[in-house]
Image 1: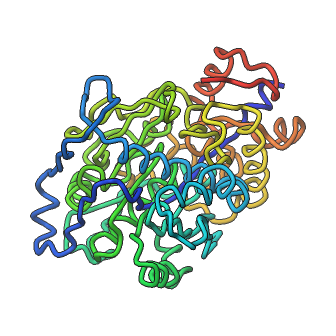
Image 2: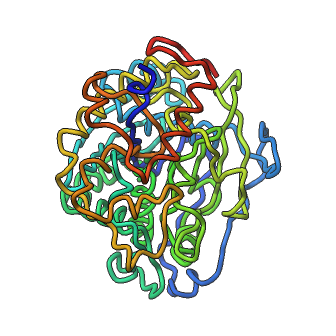
Length: 439
């Protein structure tokens, strides 16, 4: 039972560039004249001195309560997109009472989904939501099962995104997925309409592979002067150093946060190399906190700082401030809720598991994942088997025991991640779907 419970999972992507209205603003410089110069020089923006801090650990950097709250909202959105967000979010987090606390005279709806798009050819989905309490219109990218089987090469993006950066590259699978979404939404026409009509700021968020796509979206839209906030949660590396430097120049400090929860192993899937590095600002959330549900450490100046680079616990990818599929309540881990979402995602994935994957070329690949996903997908005949690899490294329940035994054995490329998830759950003593794991 435990094996069928832990056979296949994948996590998501959401994109959000938003912030609580009380958070201080870091403006995006979209008029930089020399992208190539920026891309070749590492940049970072120091955080302004804040009134209070709960940061701990090696990278002890002061962060304001408003900044943390703003990041937390984006993390909650990246979890909510996996569930019934239309019902849960206005009940659990983005409530009328919360809006009136910040804006006593507001007559706006506290939560309005204005667009739902996808799935695209690669399976990417997302939403656009207006949240007056945050003074944001937020793009949220949902993650995809089996993204390790996409093209894992680093592809040039200077011309593709009109960046003027000759040596900027990004993960080919994430770029392809983003361009599909960009086309499906007519270059984010509805998003542009609501940003203009409400006067709210453009924000992006996403989780796991969705977080990778969110960063690509933010680089495109930030360089064009449209998006001013960029968040990702549990996302693997997506940019080479030149692209990361350009991204960092646009989203300095609190304007761009890349968050890792506890010992989430998903960010480690694509290792550091000449083709892949993390963006700043790194944000490590962990444990519990009476006010927010988690404590934090900031990794501000070093994208290789291990504090914000991920760990070896696959199931930690299922909880960013709230369980996957929830929208803020509870603020502790709940495996029953998480497993229900994973069963649904697993069933949806297997129905289309052989449709649109582009197997990476072993001869041209410039990097490999820590689980050797590239080699596991080198043959088109292996697509169905490889499709049962975990999306963000986490393992989850299959639709039922018989289908799990028949079709959800992890591919060789995901074996190490699968074992990590299995070992993690065994260590926690999980022996049934109904067991609740409290953090």
